[in-house]
Image (spheres, helix red, strand yellow):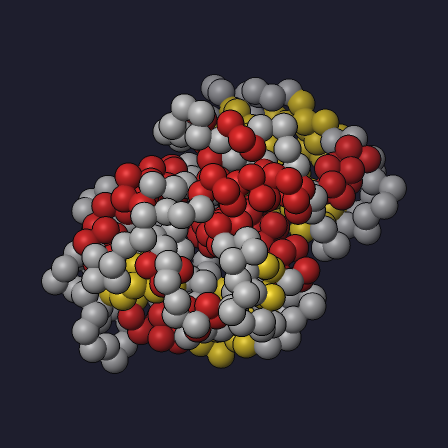
Length: 354
């Protein structure tokens, strides 16, 4: 499993959602609810969207998945904060035939269409259809998402195909790069909500039972959702799709509703509370201390990232202590704490001034 990197446009968990253009009153019927009642209410709000034609997807993704430079935003080839090996131009680079990466881009059903028997309206639901390199899309096939240690194939930007090493599954799986794992997780939470109780003919496989995620997949995607927070890319995409098919992804607008429905994050909150982690001073002049107690974890890994997702420092602690971090350049940073048992347990912004 690769190390997670922080989303480029987010410092704190859920902070970027304040910029979402949610229509007034859109989620009124979901307020104050939780678990099954919230799941049902959100389903009813985003149900019966304006279904599009399959051919129109080529046109729609020119507004839903476009980079600031006008190129196709392909999460299977993009390198956030870096230079991708190639980029696609809309229309002229549509697939088409392909024999290698970089030949053309396709319309991928990130929730494979074979899982819902290629039926409508799922087969044209823009929330889960993304432009991807045709060759990489072919390699991904209809394998579930997962986490891969020893890849049998790796894309130019680091996507991996191989045996799933996430506990609960061992089949072939496809792992996108860290910076887009949260995007795909929230797409899957959308699908599990939009088609809640509408999945009677859907398939059951290693990852899903109809439209619902199996326990291991729910746990993994929740971790992806926490580690790669909502980005401006997702917010812009959600707004664009709303103008086309008149429904939204609630988990981009309100990421906290993942916890409210599936109740997965309780143990993460309890662990963070029990560690009694304090970070001081913050803001600082570059000298920062982390004080914590550790009565239940064998190891805690503290990692410091730039906002572009570059790891600049790492400390591994096995017992309660005070750790010192020195950062010699002013700016914004993200401190993450990881456990082998629970993965991400802390996600905090750090400010360094001169």
